[in-house]
Image (cartoon, rainbow, N blue to C red; front, side):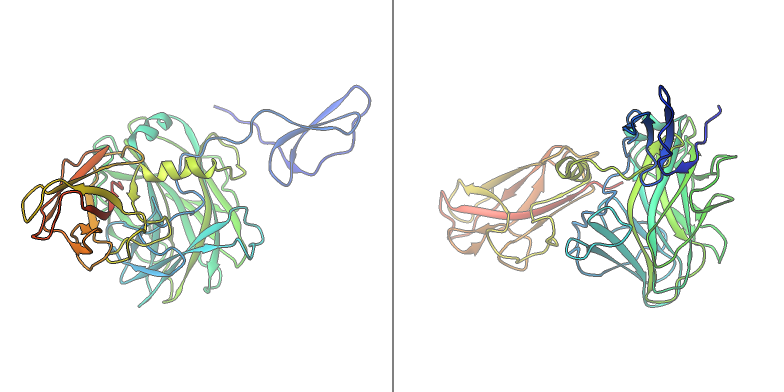
Length: 402
């Protein structure tokens, strides 16, 4: 395969009569034309589909996203922003979603970005997302570009590694090894991956975008300003899942880290202008992996108060009897797999029981059953004061992250 490289430039002078000049715009990298009258035009559809979800770091549903929340997983992936998992060399790390709606960030096109900080002690950090098998299947055998926007937090010019990892043909689709890194490695050494996971080396002969190809990945030197970094890879024909990852080449000092936004995984060689879908569609992509009854920016918790989005049911039997009530919970979006974790939360007390709204009291045993990719339901035992027709309510969260 061969490819054509066009120089990035500003609009050239108006060509002679009867001529049209083709150029690459310096601002957005679109392929454009300018005709004899100075009229500009775009050539084709430059913006390719982005296979990463939550690429603009809009959502961190498991936490209060505006707060720095502590996570720790030294060999696995602790999910922070939806779809994105933290791996830290040692305790611990924090994740915070930053909203720029009132104070725009120079060089950033999206509203939000995520900030990861290493806390407690010095250590390496990794942030990664697993692309599901259905989508990876579309990309097998293709050339793809991985691209992120990064900036440093506190530390002077740290080097991050940007790479693409595969769950190999020997692995299980949508179930990459949970302890996916057995060792983070020393400074300048890439993490050791678990069984059936392997680095995909950057494509030979294709230079990194604002970064340098180095072994398994590319070296990205961060500054205090937002920069785009990107690299090109060939996806193996047998890959079952792809994992996009950024990790530190060396240790971050405690309270140091990096910020990230505008991530993308697209087909082909081309450097991309970040181009998300509309919010409703992007949210649906996220909810295929995680869903909750709480407001999007409310952390799941017990005793947050009634009328906060909880699901509702009606008691059909009086007294302290089994199956006094049922609540059927059908997901907004069918899940990628049956959720590994369904959790329920009493909206008006510090426990996991359904709440009798009418009687202002807790119900009895509340049991999750019938869990699948589309729904689950709750079988609820009544208490002595339960009356037929009482309104009952409960919050839930369902996690099917890979």
